Amino acid sequence: MTLPFASEPLRFPFPALAALAGRLPLGGGREVALAALMAAHLAQGAASGEALPPAERATRASAAKVWLASLALPAATRVPFARCLDATAGMSLPLSGALRSLAAAASAHLDAPSVQELERLARQLAGA
Image 1 (cartoon, rainbow, N blue to C red):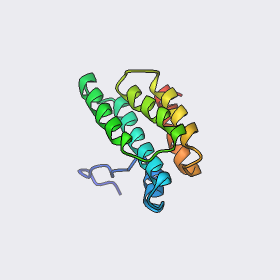
Image 2 (image 1 turned 30 degrees about the vertical axis):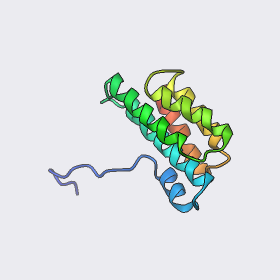
Image 3 (image 1 turned 45 degrees about the vertical axis):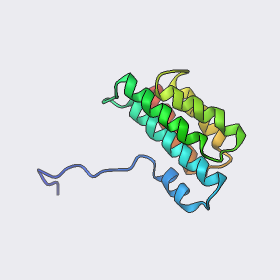
Image 4 (image 1 turned 135 degrees about the horizontal axis):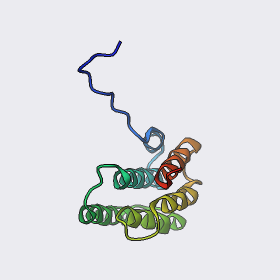
C-alpha cells in the first residue's frame, strides 16, 4: 500500500564502498576505500540534474584534494584519485573516464562490489 503523502525512502548510492571502509582496519586499504567513496560522491554530485555552479564544484574538488593529500594512499592510486577529483570540477578528462581509471587503479584494494559501484557510476556518467 502506497501512502499518498509519504516521501520516497532514501537510498544511499554507495553501500558497498561505505561497508568496506567500515570493515577494514586503519591504514592503506581503508583510506583507499574512503577516498573512493569521496570521489564517487563528488562525481555523482557533479553529474546530477541539480549540478552545482562550476565555482562551487571547483572549491569542493580543491578541498577534497587537500584531504586526499593527508591520506596514506598507495603511490599507484594518487594520480588517478587526483584526476578524478579534477574531473568533478570540469578541469580535465571526462568524468566517466577518470572514474574508470580510478576503479582500475584502486581495484587491488577494493572488493568486487565496491569496484562494481564505481564502474556502474562511470557507465551512468558516460550515458551507457
